[in-house]
Amino acid sequence: MLSKRNKEVLFNPLSKDNPVLVQILGICSALAVTVKLEPAIVMGLSVIVVLACSNVIISLMRKTIPTSIRIIVQLVVVAALVIMVQQFLQAFSYDVSKQLSVFVGLIITNCILMGRLEAFALSNKPWPSFLDGVGNGLGYMIVLVIVAFFRELLGSGTLFGLQVIPQWCYEHGYMNNGLMILPPMALITAACIIWVHRSRNKDLQENNK
Amino acid sequence: MKALRKFMDKLKPHFQEGGRLAKLQSVYDGMETFLFTPNTTSRSGVHVHDSNDLKRSMITVVVALLPCLLMAMLNTGHQHFLALGVEAGWGEKFLFGLLAMLPVIVVSYGVGLGIEFIGAQIHHKEIQEGFLVTGILIPLIAPINTPLWMTAVATAFAVIFAKEVFGGTGMNIFNVALVTRAFLFFAYPGEMSGDKAFIKVDSALGYGGSMEQQAADAFSGATPLGHVVTGDMGNLPSLYDAFVGFIPGSPGETSMIAILIGAAILLFTGVASWRVMVSVFAGGAAMAALAHGFSTPTYGASLLDVPTQLCLGGFAFAAVFMATDPVTGARTRTGQYIYGFLIGVLAILIRTYNSGYPEGAMLAVLLMNAFAPLIDYCVVQVNIRRRLRRSRATKPEVQI
Image 1 (cartoon, helix red, strand yellow):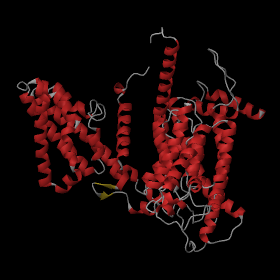
Image 2 (image 1 turned 180 degrees about the vertical axis):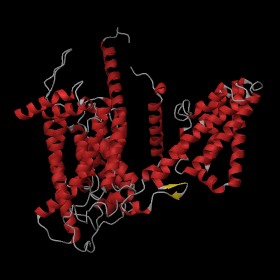
Image 3 (image 1 turned 45 degrees about the vertical axis):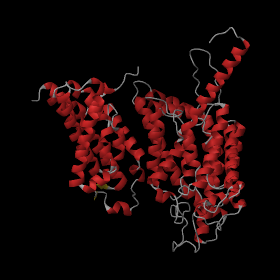
Image 4 (image 1 turned 60 degrees about the vertical axis):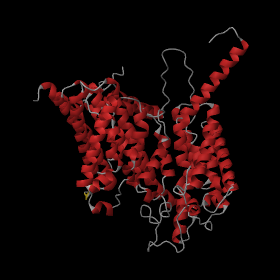
């Protein structure tokens, strides 16, 4: 089940081939849903589900889809899955779906999805495609969670809505950083993560000399 | 001087390759070139060196900022005793202001230079002196009541993300001091505006402050523009006060006289571009006249006449010390006119028609910083096209 190649397919997107950190895809939603941890995790899970399922479906149909209309077919599959996820969230976790508002629907336009369908699912069997979907979704979710962790901690002083910065800090003049809640800091936080990631992985650095 | 030279020579071997402190070579290098003019010459090609190097231009700007700094201290003390309703002499006022501003200056320089030094050690580069000016600008543009830790965080953010990541001094896109202020302004909006930010009521390093810590009745610490934006036109200072500088505001920006002295120093030494400076004032005056022509009570600031608009708030300070930053501004001559004029227009436009921001100079300069390269590009392209057309007209046989 998990041959060497499949393992690479599953685990490479977590770090070395991370869709957000290395391929710089899906940045837009990473800005929008990372003010708090909870919506970030739900968003990450939604993307994993949609990505894994659509990868499998497209992979099953890969030999029957005419090349000229493959984008439309992919969009139909992804859109159907996204609507299912959206309905599921509205039914079982209404508050979070309210917070995520339009961004669950916008998973359709997430570059990671089309990227994986085009680059992987169209030319691979269903099982590796499934692993690839899960791996890339996880890679996306990890980044979202790290960004949301810092933004919620520094911007609101909470984690998962619970107060973690003690009251006496505020009494001694500490204040939440309002800039962390604004979108620019999501970009800068993501940039810092990319910075750390690249300085740890020397092979990702371009050769400047 | 000779003793100092001897001392530096004695230390030198330790910092060179193989010495005990070789890792701190750039620190030594920085100190040595700070104290003495380096006597090294280029080895290849023909180079003409002007002794007016980066260090000297930086120091000139710092000197030009001194009148503003002194007036800032005096005014900080003046506003403090005024708010408390206590009579005090000029000496006491100045002392209070000095004690109030000193910690901010120390924190700003400490954090900024600290990061620069560490960065230089990591990259084995020379320490660059770009922070000399930024470090003195920050205390002058941050409200006096900003907690020191906020100043430290904002300075660190600005030096790392506005300067070091772009490659250090001379490579930054945005003015570092203004990024510091923008960070403070957006991260801690409650502390940066309103009527508590601009006048220090409590004691400074144990000096000043009244026993009961009570501000005088009917006292309001909002800046004149803060009053205007809420539609309160009764509290405006006289034009004379605004010109001399005894009004509430960020420390450096209040005194028009001090700013003009600074401007004279910058222009006389040729450090700043008069094109930018003049066109900022021209743009500001044009926009202020326009706004005044269509004045409505909905936008309080549009009721102000042109000289008041130019004297109040950070407009003049931004025009003289921020817009003229040679690194972040436009470099072509035509470009400098356009760049400055748009800064002036935008500053007054934001100030007048956006009630969320009583002062627009900071945002105007930062916005135009982003557009400066584009302005330069367009000016250069237009010039190239013009000359091409001219050469085609005179020599029709040349095919390009």
